[in-house]
Length: 182
Image 1 (tube, rainbow, N blue to C red):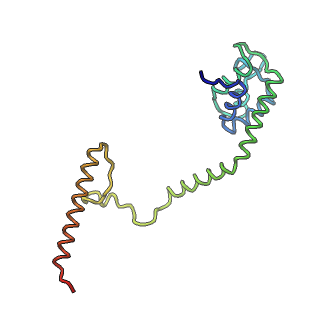
Image 2 (tube, one colour):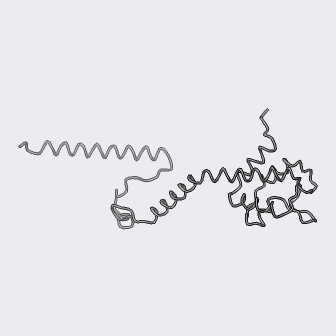
Image 3 (cartoon, one colour):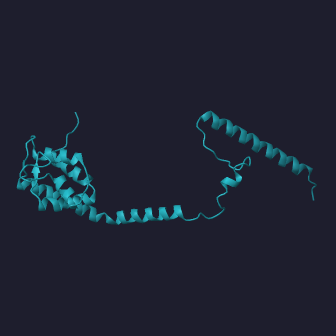
């Protein structure tokens, strides 16, 4: 039998998987809305944490959070207001997750800088010879590397290349023999 995690562990994991903007919006949303469990909305104006986040700009649909929230709160299919304890736990986990992300912002900055360098490298001209594919396409042997779909085609091409290399080597050896020694 596998180990089943506790409802609070599932909730924390689901919160950590939410996008940063959604976590911030959810934190703001649970402070400014009546939060419920067991439904998306109720007739009294209460909303689930995901809808509260959505109303505050966190435009994300994350079913695993809703399931983890309902499992944590013991929702039985009937909407009810979230208890103070449930809201404190949710708030604490959101704040902890945001703090943890703030500690790792150096990595995020490094990733963003790396992506910017990659984008710049992709658009900047490459050093060396200019692109000559169109010009050389009709010349035999201009491209020494090509993709193979099957191993036997690759093996045959490799055998031909080795034969050609052996012929070139033999021609060079014969050329050396014909040259006078000085």
